[in-house]
Length: 282
Image (cartoon, rainbow, N blue to C red; front, side, top):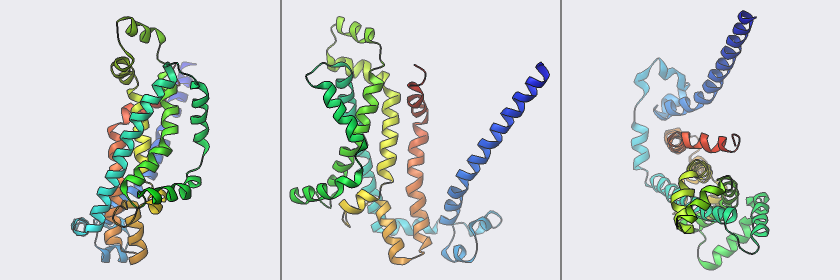
């Protein structure tokens, strides 16, 4: 019996590994194609496919990236994207952490009802709030600014962040918090010295989700950002509309827009996996 069992396990493992390799190839191929296209001239891209550069590496150069860096509009759009995504992520994680701890461990009137309101906001589509918030931002002078885009993303990112962190913080053993209080620790000290270190996986998961969502967003930025505050997604879409298949600018810009989220994800991958698996192992 051991022989067939061992063979079955090996075949099963080989099949799973082959499937994972196939999925990885399917996922990596477009990324590799975009990278190689961004390193080829517009004439080469128009004449044949990007895969020809694998046998003719002389086609590859950084001329397109030099041209991209000389395009002040796209460079400004990249920094606008950073100025939108980074503050939004920091604000959502910080506010959601404070609110999640309050909903999980602090007693105050209306706590459960208020948390149900937060949960209910999870089902509100972004499209519903676009026009009312646009009118509000226009009245207070935030329409068409980076600050307006940041505030909109923070408002719509908080319900999910509060829900995620509240559920994670609620799993912390009560005995640990009571022991900290007996040692004379106040709520702020407990939150900063105990809850935040224990909640690092959930915080990292939320930060990744929020950053990727904001970085890749085009709908909100297309409505709330003007020409000077538009992020990279809107700038690339505008380039495509104005110049058609301007692959010499679009390809390096698109790859730059794609590689930053990848770097962020792989930098926090370990914490992300811990945060996703935390609820399933308790």
